[in-house]
Image (cartoon, rainbow, N blue to C red; front, side, top):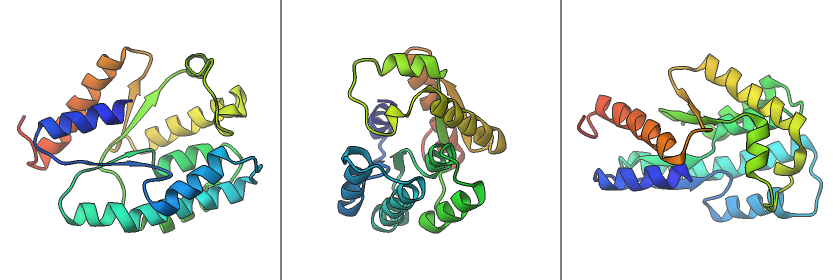
Length: 193
């Protein structure tokens, strides 16, 4: 997983990054994650969205804000952009998604987001034989919509979202991520060039 590789690299640079998983990373968040991804309930799209946002709001207040206030780097495996793509692909309108993301995130936005882009067919091949959660089991047409929404978001925010070709080897992907993070941290005076 690339986020763990980045965490290791940052540690080698003398940083102490906080690694989060969205949804999750708090007691409330983990329970909501279980409800969303492991329960037998079929959730309505709006209910699913509200559960994701509730988990994120808890994570922002309990984990992200205190870490940032202490000068810590925060890494999150997914955040608000994922909600915009995944729940938007279920038909929830963009205005509602943006409003709820804003509410949950409280103006805490990433300096950089990595979109690991892979054609849907390749992504589904990589999942062959793995147990899928209810979201991963939604099928190809759903994931085509999700990918299109992610790519549209990246085109809208190119200064923040870095699209990476995830069909390359994990080491090549890691190299590109590390280079981008080093550049961003150098701009902030947090690591040497």
